[in-house]
Amino acid sequence: MPTHITPKNATLIDHIYFSPGPKYNPQFAIQSGNIWCAITDHLPNYCLLLDANTKHQKEEHPFVTLFSHTNTGKFKEKIRNIDWKEIYDCSNVNTAFRKFEQNIKCSFLTNFKLVMLSRR
Image (cartoon, rainbow, N blue to C red; front, side, top):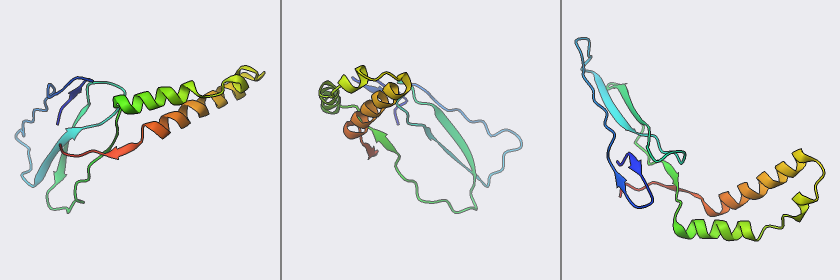
């Protein structure tokens, strides 16, 4: 899986190296991967040592948010069409921020839905 993702490409630039050492238990299974997040273009890596005798659930694909040009365009259009007058006219800063946040969050969740990540 790629570990560095930009709008133009996805590359594998981060690696996990494991040395079993003298106290390694061969009954452990090693599982590694990336933690998907939209905060950075570098995905954090993890490495787990699992007891091979324990039955684990079938691996499920994580859900991700797709920031495609189409979704981004729809989001921008929805933001443009929000009636901001009620926020400008609000005298309480906390109420105004709550309304602002609701508008942005609603627009975001409408246009950037979570989808199951495919192996492709």
